[in-house]
Image 1 (cartoon, chains in turn yellow, purple):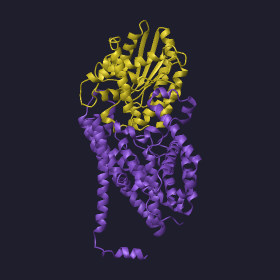
Image 2 (spheres, one colour):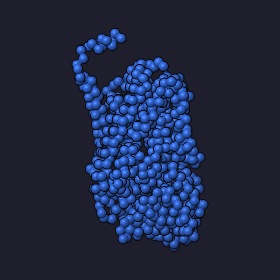
Image 3 (cartoon, chains in turn yellow, red):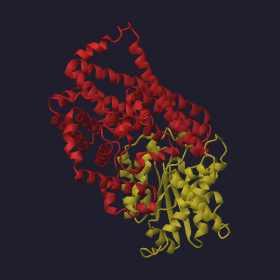
Image 4 (cartoon, chains in turn brown, green):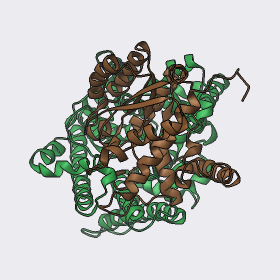
Length: 254
Length: 385
């Protein structure tokens, strides 16, 4: 579908990464950097900008099973914790706290109920909402899906939180059994309509798979790839947040 | 009502064959060749073409039977066709079960704990298989045949109405479409939600195809030749293309005016969004303009592969669904290198053409079997009639 576009963008990104490699060698692992060109959706995050200025950034991550990792170290290695680590590193002097409200096999309408409570009690500056996979598996009505997303975004904005949406994982083995397409489209449209960023996790992971960065097809019980993937997702999410919270430049300046 | 008894319009077969190829390609996820299919360049996709042409040919074939033999026999034949499609669908479901059972046994990855939940239904086959037989549980990419079955089940009375009063038939269909939108009607699905192709919505395109077959096309001919209509169609296609490009290049997405975004999103595939119908109609207007009925190349060997697939659409469609499973299997089990993706796509289309040819050969052979007819006699009789 958009593989060619992705490959072209990726090649551009690789060339860029190679030329700038020395300057930022201590920044991200090279494997994460491959996904950077995918972060091309820069709607501003004014509430995060304000929170960073105030030296305290609370983030609430709401999602389902693909926001977790199994095992005793699952919580510290999953992307929400990695996001906290990456942001703390990039924002010295800012108290970054990532809270999670994650439950396996939860649909977007289910998450909505839960996050309304979370917004009231945590009062985060940013809500990261991961959705799509369970909705596709359960065949939730696409209208109900985008309706829930829209309501959640509106409620977050009203409660003083910015929102970033995170879509489903790319999973080659189950790709012909889980129809993510409609739900990914709806997430993209909700993000465009509400002018909020979307982390295209699906596109990023697919790119990694195509370029051989990570092997998602071979069966394994080991956690190493899963941990590296979550680490990268956490870092890329941090990039997206930093990018979105930069003071808005006058139109046409970039 | 007198119908032009001219020979079959090859354009129908040709474009239905192309639609079947595109559906096959689109059903292989992460296939680089998908990049060429029309769904990437506008709102509608190959499904619209398939449903419209199916409505057209079904009305053409059974409409004649209804006029010549009567309502009961024609209705019985339509129901028989629905039954054949049901059997085909169950056969495909069996293949899907085999595939998913294999994945359940052979695949493990801690990254995909959630995704692997998709095989959980194997734990309660009693419920799922029953739901599948009732057309409520429909695996990915297996939504089109159930839609077709329901459309055929309701088609006999509609065909009767269309032959009495074409305008009333089409108006009834449009009314049903409107009521569906108003009251949010759809068929329930299992384990939750509703049908991914709402038959109450998609019937509009099916009936419109039938209406065209029963003389509507001639009535539209004048309109289709109007430069204003052609200009509007072209403008709409350009608009849809621009919007589609903004999906792949997020920077462009930010340029789509908010008001436009609010008007058009979400583009509802399940309920056959008006934007999708308009896109299909625009494509049709331009196609009919560029490809006249008597276009020479339709009879050339280049067009033959698509035409032969279009003439055996049910078989080719089912084969395409199976081949898309198989193709994806090759990608995950063997390799998904670029050349493999291209090779699998071409091989799939090649197999579809080969099997379609084989089926037409069988038909001819079977027609030739039975008591050998006296040579040349029938032709004399027909010539005398």
